[in-house]
Amino acid sequence: MDLLLVYVILDVFSRYVVGWMVAPRESAELAKRLIEDACVKQNIQPGQLTAHADRGSAMTSKPVAFLLADLGVTKSHSRPYVSDDNPYSESQFRTMKYRPEFPDRFGSIQDSRAFGHHFFPWYNDDHRHSALGLMTPAMVHYNLAPQVREQRQRILDAAYLAHPERFVRHPPQAPPLQQEVWINKPAQSEKESH
Image (cartoon, rainbow, N blue to C red; front, side, top):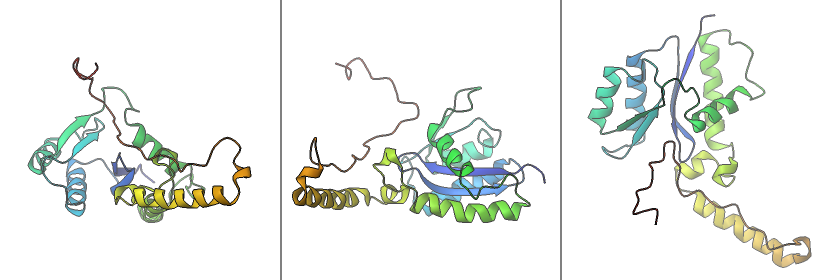
């Protein structure tokens, strides 16, 4: 079977996969359609989003650049000749490739799409990330994480009250929630750093 490409649009704050597609080739038109569909599905308003992409021909193409401009999306690209400039995307692909059901080879494009239809819902709705305070991407993406964390903390507080002897150092704390995420964090200005 020929090489297949997986296009993935990942919200780096929540790690939520907002769009994906398997295609037999790299194509500006396919990338454009995926981005457009994801923006509509997620109700992205102009000026609300920055898209960080690799420097593949599809993502640097004029159709994609014009689409992003039309949608009011700021674009950012990885550094030249650096294949791992987006650690969030690299981590998501690593998780996918290390799943027990990930095959050595896919028999067909339909097999790879079937894998994606199973993997991406699991990744969004069931996979818990340590960097997200052991929340799923869906919990963070749909702003459920603060409520879930409060509920976890109430359970931990009750456990501590019932058996303080089990907690030697201090009362247990639910993992904190992240406040910000950056790929290429802008340098702080002189005024901000003081």
